[in-house]
Amino acid sequence: MLAKTGGLYRVSCGGNVLEATLRGRFRQRGRDRVLVGDRVILGQHPDGGATIEEVATRSSVLKRCKPGRHKGVRQVAANIDQVIVVGAACAPDWNNHLMDRFIAVAAANGLSVTVVINKCDLCDTADDLALPYRSAGYPVVLTSIPNAQELTELGSRLEGRVSLLTGPSGVGKSSLLNALQPGLRLRTSEVGEKSGGGRHTTVAAEMYPFGAKGFVVDTPGLSDIGLWGLDPREVAGAFPDLGRFASECRFDDCRHLEEPNCAVIAAVGSGQLAASRLESYRHLLEEAIEAARPWQ
Ligand code: GDP
Ligand code: ZN
Image 1 (cartoon, rainbow, N blue to C red):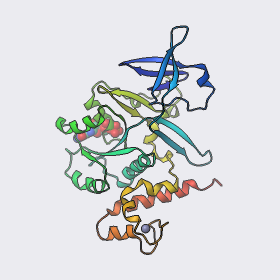
Image 2 (tube, rainbow, N blue to C red):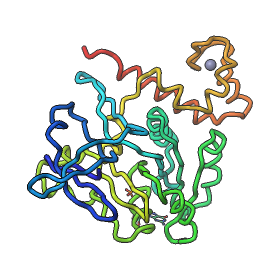
Image 3 (cartoon, rainbow, N blue to C red):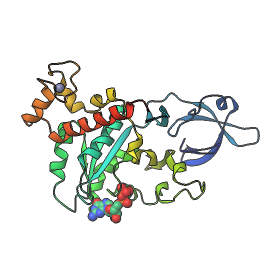
Image 4 (cartoon, rainbow, N blue to C red):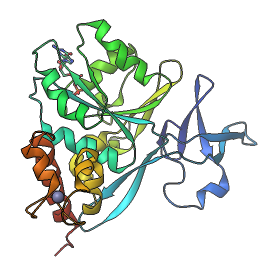
């Protein structure tokens, strides 16, 4: 299922896109009964239109935690295979904290992450920037739009999979997708013209066919990463590189803040772990604790 507008669901079917409605018994269920990315079984309504009869078991569900007073979890998209977190080597400057946030949210959702460093034509810092992420075990792909051959690796990573591209704005996400697949018209450029309801109506995810068998999911909601509350208990798990050292910490529940004999802090001291990764972790942990506080 590619996108939902009102009661209509756009479904990709053998290379075509058709519109379907929900079969009656689905309407009774909860709010998130059919998600963008769901694989569905179609049937035919007596009047000839297509209906969604069945939803296949999901391999993953991307969730958004709503912090604050109206806490809760909203399911955003299903069956995403990977999250591509895009940053720019410069223009705008690389922002460790922002990048680590996007990566942590994806990791907390149990999704595999690839880091892309774009605009490599503008400066030669990309290899240094890549280092902490490569050590953390994330694949890092360097790209630049002017050098078409540098796009092939990213292109082959997108092929045949369902990918979500995210990252700070202005780093070249739309440019990358357009360069890889001219004609892909991402909805982000048109501001809710049909709905007329302003920006909040575009928070829903939308999926686009990409290449022969791939799909790209566009979630404007994820670009506003502030909305993506992480449970404080999830934060450490979203930093696998810290986790490698954490088992050596003196305390089992060490939060790597000021505890004595913290192996993570020691790893930064000995150069085995980038200081920026520990800083990002602490920053996110603070934010998560703050967001988890009951509203007063
Ligand atoms: P988005 O907000 O992440 O989708 O970023 P855009 O795709 O809109 O790109 C922002 C600006 O950066 C545009 O002016 C692009 O032309 C430019 N840009 C994107 N990728 C590259 C690149 O690899 N090299 C250079 N020099 N400019 C780029
Ligand atoms: Zn520790």
